[in-house]
Length: 431
Image (tube, rainbow, N blue to C red):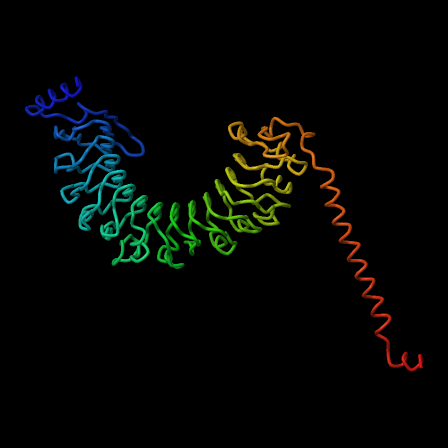
């Protein structure tokens, strides 16, 4: 209450006195990467009602988290120097960008508001805009978003808006659709209720798109992806199979996230053509098999071309891994194998020798046998990892019996041929 009274008093005072933003908010002069003033007015409620004056050299204005419900045309949005404007995490239901005069603006963040519509002509004056964040608003198929005038846009984020049906029918890249420029480098359409996409949907940006986030949708296939991608997040889609053919063309890919899928196995050669540095396969609850040849056979004998620095298999359904993977896993800087139902027998003892970071071992525990249940793997000694002798002997007996049966079958075949495959001359002699 006292703060409100103080603010009201300041409002009365500033009605007769010109006020600078830096009298109310935090200002900081910087020289890198740009030279100018960064004005931080986040959490400053009703600050716009004072109509403060923006410093001439301002390059960033942060009005996030300020409980803004509307923005009236004021002088602060008439700046020849402003490069970045942050209006995220407010309660804006509409915004008239036509009243803004920000010819140098390159970054605009309108995320986490309540916007339902933006006039397609609103972006006409933002020809230098490179980054646009519209995530977590209330845009729908009726919003008819269009970005034709943003000719220099490099990155757009449309996450968590109910526009999936529209993206399926209206192209993101042609003038009749969303009109994104063909030199766009990063697109995020996570959680937009996307059900289906044409296999060739991203063909117009095949050589330019570097980053694609298409997670948290309802896609059950991996569409044909731009071959120049360096970052791909396809997580949390109902995909039940990952094939070599789908990922093989992505030879520039560095970071891949395939979390929360419906896959049951990672088969051989799936990642053989990739030179990944980061791979996430977390929370794939049906994943039971991870092939020792998933990165290709060649890498097991020569790890020179294995660049993976971070690998997470956390929270899946893996019970064992082939020891031949040790030559690869020992090179991974951050390896997360936590929250899997590991069977701690003699086949898994090798995992103790991996250089796993201390913060990734607490939930790296045994699920079975019973005497090791919930024990941390790195707390165990090597002699704790034993195999059931009877099971092992049965397995070996099964292999031996198979060999014996094969030899007997071959012997019977030879005897049959020698007895019944006689020549006519032999038959005459017998008579």
